[in-house]
Amino acid sequence: MIDTRIKLARKKAGYSLRGLADALNGKVTAQAIGKYERGEMMPSSDVLIALSKTLQVSISYLLDTQSIELTEVDFRTKANTTAKDRARVETEVIEWVERYLQIEQILELDSADWEKPFDVLRVIRSIEEAEDLASEVRKNWQLGLDPIPNMTELLEEKGLKVLIVDLPDRVSGFTCLVKRDSLPALPVIVVNQNFSLERRRLTLAHELCHRLIDPKHLSEQDEEKAANRFASAFLMPRSQVEHEVGKHRNSMGYRELIDLKRIYLVSGAAFLVRLRDIGIISSSNLTYAFQSVARSWRTVEPEELEPKENRGQYERPQRFERLCYRALAEDLISLPKAAELLRRSISDVEVGLKGPEQAR
Image (tube, rainbow, N blue to C red):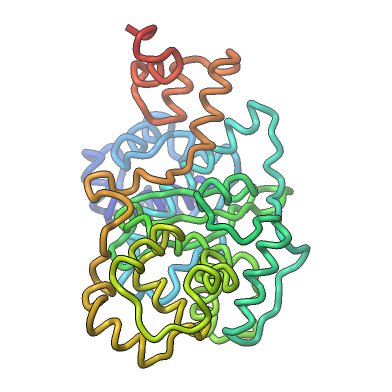
């Protein structure tokens, strides 16, 4: 699959065939690169090294040593996503997954499956059924009704691969499957690190829904609405919200709403919409709230949970890093290998292993 990898990396870098040939300083012609991408010819070792440097991808990525490809990559309604954006994100996900699976193989961990709450995809035919689906997932995963303190950690514990990266502005996240030779496909959820923590948590729950339902029974628009409803119900269970707020309210003040969004770790606007969806406030109450106390909440998050200067740092995926340090501590990999896997300098990784005092 070196042909596919070269083509994807070229698109990620934004080169035409001729542009890449020029960037390689005439080392190989545009016609030859076209043959590589069609699988008609293999690059020599020196050309492979040059391609790796110019396209800023690893040689192992180009060689596709683990026969990994992404399937069902769906940015859904984000029409402004360019081919270059998609190629950049897909390349980054593939490189990361290859490193992730490599460390799991070194530690002899099972990457064959994830802890699904159901044996088969669920059929839902209405947006409202997503509410019951969220309750069932919570029950099967024994989560109770308490707010979920860390969505990323929860999904990683269940065997999902979670990646936070720089995505195009209009894309909050997406889910895809990693296809491997003779092994079950692994689900990956990717979220945009440039969005607020509140939005990332909702996106993770939203994308989880897409991994659980059979999309054949809903229109694309209704599938998105159902995933939104699932995410709200999963993060803000009806009975617990009713306990905190009351079953019927005509109005709510700013401080109460801020305190409640901090309890459930969701956006203020999402919390208000949730109150409307479960009948605690009416549609007219919601409209009035967005015209008064929550006037700007649909565009500007009030009292964000994560400071803007630390965007993307809260609730970050940690399992991959933890596994790398575990293998390093057990002498299963060398310090340079750990640095290669983590994409960090050797000195930084050494500090992570020994601590700042011992690494001096």
